[in-house]
Length: 324
Image (cartoon, rainbow, N blue to C red; front, side):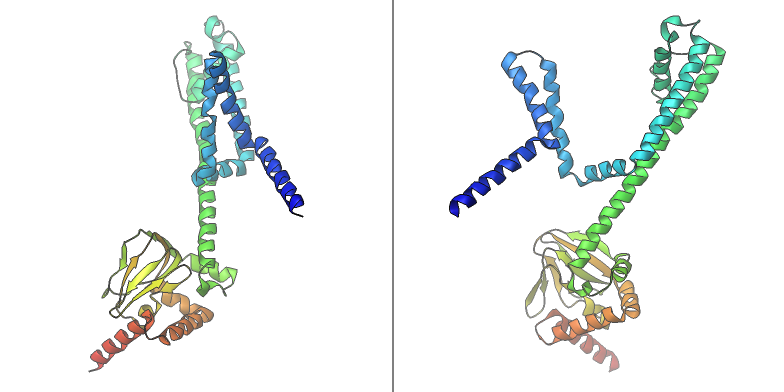
């Protein structure tokens, strides 16, 4: 049995190696290594060393922004192909027009369609090298329309890619926020529609280690959900630590009190913040969520050392002072 398991592990490792060798990243690594090996072995073909920059493209796997951009380009590939087809048609059109107009005047520069296409590409791209320019009035007239068309040729794919990129980033942020909400037990019983409704009210916030989130005595203006990291709440009598999936500040919002403790991040922490106005509107239209918040508050009150108890005690003290 042990020999069979060892053989299976060796086969799996060999399969993984072959899988990487024939993957896109593996081929890029090979193409980047071989030119350098040839240069080192022969001392010739130094231009092949330029392929050594190919590993740079592996950075795509470590950059969410690059992955989002590639995803946006892939999603709009049909529209971009359409833009390329239109661009080719426009290039051929203007190249043919200028060839017909200028071929006898400038046979060395515009004597063939390919030469005219070079002028059309440079003009439509608004680069304007100036190596080929029309000299006849009609040629200049056509060039004016080519330049104006060039602006549209640039704006069209840029608009498509930028819109798709913005949508991809928005979609990625939606997925990330959804995942963060799913880690908060308070929202675990809600439906997808209710979670989507809450997502519009929440805003993400990241605090670094040692950063103070709220101070004791501050007016309670928000409720916080810890999605990653840990915070420490310094109460008058003790210190409380809250980690992933916990929330705090709801008692202060329910009773409209001031903060009874100072909250500090013990390490880099990601939070979701719900403002007081949105909090009250949310529990007003979601009875199940309101019941969950109140039940959690009662459970915390069962432990007299909890943050909720301290906040409620402060609320009752202030309410009693106002009554007198």
